[in-house]
Image (cartoon, rainbow, N blue to C red; front, top):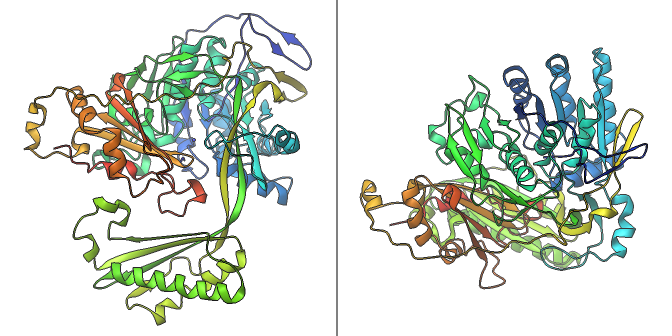
Length: 625
């Protein structure tokens, strides 16, 4: 997930833009027309059905697509090393090719971060396709996020991790800043039909068109926060239109699920909807779940252009499949960009094996432990050293639930072994990989299949995030022969504001009458919507009351301590307070941040759920009464 859009713009009369050719400053006429923005991709690998649906049915002004994550950046960096023509996401070109005529005829502007680490190559590829179809496109690029060519200079500044305070590791694979929306909006001001960027905050892809259209200034923080929330809600594609919804069984039409559209007004209010006659649903629950998705402190959601306060946001259902969003607040951003680096840290290999028959759980445990024991003996003979980490989980026995597993779970007559390991030496894991199949003849009965054959060995990529002064970046936009530089606003706060926990855990006065309809037994999902995701090695779980009357009860029983105990088997507890709770009274919601709960997070984690996507579903069974 987190699994992840982009940004840019023109500034205001009391702030200037530094161009390489000209310098311009001035206020321009503000439009009051609504702007319709559709998002066709929430990640690299999203469905190819989304863009055609939005272009043909969405009545759009702008089409945006988000492809990038921290790990994607490292993969694209490796691809570019193999060929100077690689390093961007080819899915974008494939998606646009059959739609360019419709996009051109309708006057739809396109904004994407598909440029990855080779923005110019992505632009050249799109221009080649357009020319082949006889279509004239003004394609602009925004560059400056990639710091790999300045790695030595960055190292000289001795940056420290935002999470642990540790020093920048060696063996850096990618190094990219999260740029904001104003450079993208500035490119749109030049007359661009398509703007291609590299790394930027996901929500900037939506905020930029609004800055461009409404001429929002860099100090209009409430408006910038509202536009950022619009981007945050749609940046993950169908997640706001019925995808991964708590009430999944009530959502029809997954095969043609509608992708999200925000219809935005100049005052910052906007409506979330989807194309007509498509599957999925847009209602309070689907939008509220996405509001709390992958955030920390909702009153201090830090972005390059603004620090957002989502805590008092209001969601109101309008017409069918329409939710009106208001109430977002903002304040000045910090003077630094967040930079994410990925670095190599050994190798990993994951073996998956199925079993059927009585005591499948016990058979798979014994099999996995025997494989580890055998290979450790081999490593010792070859002087290869021990595993750096081993993670064993058996599915079908509710192993991921820990102390919350059902009593009968281990009696299951079928199961799946997940055995993931890491080692400093690739040769050691190649040996491990060869020792999985022999279990089928020399260990437990009923081992039936090894999906994909012999497990493959992959490098471990870890994430390192730090802050770097905005003024040190050379952000440029180019369209044809026009080249301009972007200068950040001077009205930044002294530093990026960090989150402050709002864990009141107050004891609310309730009578219990609210739960009579449940017959004295109630689990959390009966009275709340839930959604979870990741931020690095930490997970978040958003909980939103289905009705206002349930909110006091949820606050009373779902304390940070209660959640910490529920997930104690997954949290790498380095301190007593590993769970932070925040309140969103505007939507009757809570947000929990589970620190160090993902086993390293991303591809560094050996767990089956390295991004915490299942944590909300696990908490759904939490007993309220």
